[in-house]
Image (cartoon, rainbow, N blue to C red; front, side, top):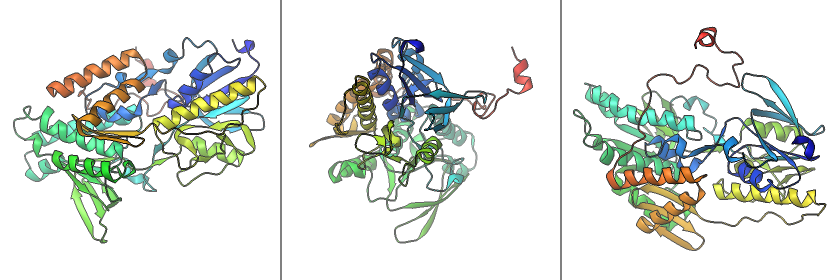
Length: 447
């Protein structure tokens, strides 16, 4: 197949931007290689439902190889891109096991997404996991449901109270959605399952340095979201900056400068993003500028200045302060593919990228969501209905859509969360397949 096409496109990342670009190039006279360090496309907006037991990881992820199987000019490679050589037009990558390899390109689409940022305090990470990957969601599931188990078996009232306290840092969509879901788990799903504790006594603390939750949604929807969180019993601490996190709780500085200590058995980090290391490597190789979060600044045609063959898309792109949402990723991926198709036909494509805002949505609890679509705003039950249709439409594959609908049906109608299983043991035998080239000898001997 490679010999059939003389032009090559390499796409780094299988998120929304990378996947939409690959699909849009499926009939183009070009060989497409999509490289990702994971084998699946992940629907990140629903990770919080995986972590709180509504959906399994299989309902929000789909194998990239399966999605692209019918696109004969598109191949998938499982590897982690570490850098590029723009002069030779080569992408450097590491295969699982540590072996390095290279891929040539005529066009390069960077769609690597972003990772969690702790604003210079990476020491918080072991105590306060973020939520960007399936692994993160499974860790959070274990910590959330495990906290109730620890509280149940504890005989010390102070320890029990600490385990029943959940602190979330960041009042954006992820923080608000997680806070609402944890309260729903405590007051509905688990309310009759324990003998020594009352799950509904669980405290959920939401911290943010801003003035209100979901501030980008506008003052009206932000106020409605705040009121809904109050009704659910979420304790909101706005104008609060987290200054320290350890195994037993967190320290917070209020607007007046006073420090306060909160004991908490579970701390979750939902604030801030940063570009991955590959963005910095590509910026250094091409002389591109990066914003404060490490995202690469691009021109109106999404290319790196001086390198029209390199297009940056999705969350890792910095252009006109566009938000890091799925709609931006999809539209930039489609634009990049469209521009490449035109140039392959020998046509100049001078249209700048234009973003069409399809709105924002945040699910808070059953029957309650906030949605902003242009000048239209929905809250409460109408917002929840709109939220349902939006997420069903954006899920990849009919199987995942049907599975999500069934999971929602049981959760919303009967308070059942069927995906609550978690393990108390370490999963796997290696920490990261890209860092450890050889399996332990004992593991290699296992059948």
